[in-house]
Amino acid sequence: MKRIAIHTLGCKLNYAESSDLQRKFVERGWTAVDFDSTADLYVINTCTVTAIAEKKCRNAIRQAVSANANAIVAVIGCFAQNAANEITKIDGVDIILGNDRKHELYKYVELMMAGDKTPGHSPEEPKAFELSYSHADRTRTFFKVQDGCDYFCTYCAIPFARGRSRSATINDTVAMAKEIAASGAKEVVLTGVNTGTFGKQHGESFLGLIKELDKIDGIERYRISSIEPNLLTDEILEFVAKSRHFLPHFHIPLQAGSDKVLSMMHRRYNTAFYASLLAKIKTLMPDACIAADIMAGFNGETDEEFDKVLEFIESLPISYLHVFTFSERPNTAALRMEGRIDIHHRREHSRILQTVSDRKKQEFYMQNQGTVRPVLWESDVKDGMMYGFTDNYIRVRRPHNPSLVNTITDFTLTTFIPDDEVFEGNEN
Image (tube, rainbow, N blue to C red):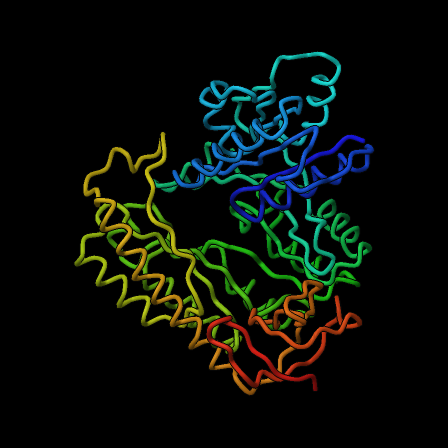
């Protein structure tokens, strides 16, 4: 029996790709095991978005190398793409594949098993695109519909790791969505690096894609995992508001709440545009959940600028934040810019933003107390309770009932449990 263990770091896109790779190995007779188990092949699907992410990658590589001296260790993904030379210096690594070739991992593993001891090494710009989706959760699937980015924001190394924006055609994407529907998953999360640029090279659009996806029977829910503010058009918002299956839940990167810092980042909008976009969403979908990425401590974010950031965020109908501390990335324009903020200020700004996020999230939850929302129930059980999410992404729980798994029921949100950030209630 050949055993494969995969450890995934970073984004939902990586998660979808790892799950797809695992499925392909299982179809070829391999058995999937946990990463802390003994395996014949360890795969680390890496991230390079921050220095902390890269440190986690190195730790995972060392864990795999020490787990089984006879195992094949493969390092794939973004960190492998941008730092292949560094990874080759880590003893015990057998295969290094960047994003251009990681979908060919099985071929390289077969070569290793046949006696070829030369590790794969792919420094070229990723150009291929493969649709993929996650398989571990029978209720929710992460569906990769786009890859790469053409924006080159000054802080970001992802375009170097993922290459330029690319995707499949609408027809091919819909065909795989129908495959997902046949698997029984009720909810699909659309993922990508810059999802809103879907279809660019084919003369198609993200709006065209979601209109076709909405027609598929079997998939009850779609979430758009992340989309740039300048690409979230009025037409998309109006369609989602009236669609059969797209949910009132948006993840819209902000990155900075100051026009000065947004300009330094080379973001394609200003604070006035962002505020008007959120106001538009709330007009069309008053109960919508709106999440935002925000970076703490980018160049030029003095205490005075940070006060502007806090004031701006307080003014927005944001449901919660994903807070990141700025981390210098190799080859990015930010390295050549002035106004560097010391790490202690960055971390303090990050801490304050996280506190704001926690309060915003609780306020959003309390705004929904007493309402009736549709909930998709998941299979995980903890202390006799099962969990699910409303359409607008509020976490709820109830006593376990196995017959409810992967079903959607109307649920009244009655009692908020602050420590667990969850609502209890009852079915209608």
